[in-house]
Picture 1: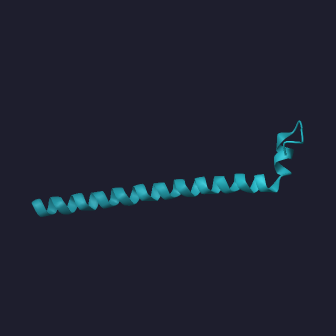
Picture 2 (picture 1 turned 45 degrees about the vertical axis):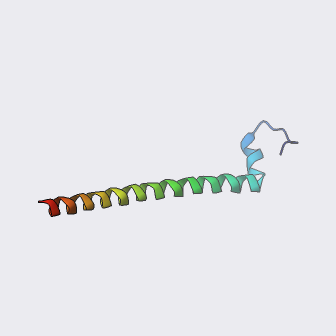
Picture 3 (picture 1 turned 135 degrees about the horizontal axis):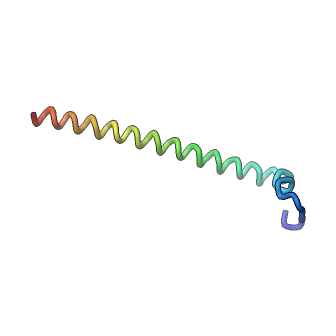
Length: 60
């Protein structure tokens, strides 16, 4: 890829399948990690609320 020069960078990227798959893979990993982080935040907040309610019920 370093030997070719072009005015159109998109054409150069699309002509390299390994680079194209690497970019797509990194985007997919990023989307999956964000989704997992959001799910974890929801689960932890739900668990925290359940524990807080249980403790309040035991104290009262």
